[in-house]
Amino acid sequence: MADTPIPLDVRNITKRFGDIEVLKGLSLKAHKGDVITLIGASGSGKSTFLRCMNLLEQPNEGDLIVHGEQIRFKETKHGREPADWKQVVRMRAKLSMVFQSFNLWAHMTLLENIIEAPVHVLGKTKKEAIAHARELLERVGLDEHADYYPAQMSGGQQQRGAIARALAMDPEVMLFDEPTSALDP
Ligand SMILES: Nc1ncnc2c1ncn2[C@@H]1O[C@H](COP(=O)(O)OP(=O)(O)OP(=O)(O)O)[C@@H](O)[C@H]1O
Ligand SMILES: [Mg+2]
Picture 1 (spheres, helix red, strand yellow):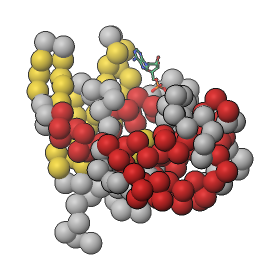
Picture 2 (cartoon, protein in one colour):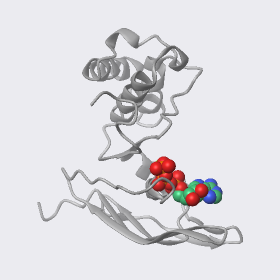
Picture 3 (cartoon, rainbow, N blue to C red):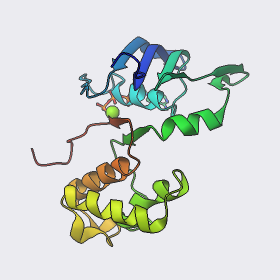
């Protein structure tokens, strides 16, 4: 559809750690329904690129346009930073990330992990969030594990739990870092 904004448009991202330039002007456009895979050697910058997309890392150069909204940056003495963190929070609600190491919150049960952001960021009621969480848990085969803590779950179960947590935000874009590293084919 011509007038629907592109969910994710990343332009000429450059990222340096000290003297090492890890990303050298990478661009990517994700249209609705696209599945895009990044393949590369360990250490080549895949995680860094994903982390730049939701500004967990600050790109040194380049632009991010999320659902038609361009992220604004400012130059500071620490380098380039987002000019408006409220805009970043709004943008992150549209981009859910499943981390390479899953990063479920260890002190919360799986169900609590899943409802945290829908309640505190999207403003859903707890009841609504729990109902949606239970549907997602069933979808990823973890309906029996709602009350488990991450440490009580296998790597693959944690990964599926992290996927359910990301889906619970009804995101426009899902960023998966090594999406099947711990899963059965
Ligand atoms: N915070 C950081 N500070 C300094 N260097 C970093 C930092 N994060 C990543 N790097 C470096 O950037 C490079 C890319 O790392 P990245 O994690 O993006 O690789 P990757 O492609 O995801 O690798 P893997 O397949 O092993 O997950 C590596 O050389 C890494 O050492
Ligand atoms: Mg990685």
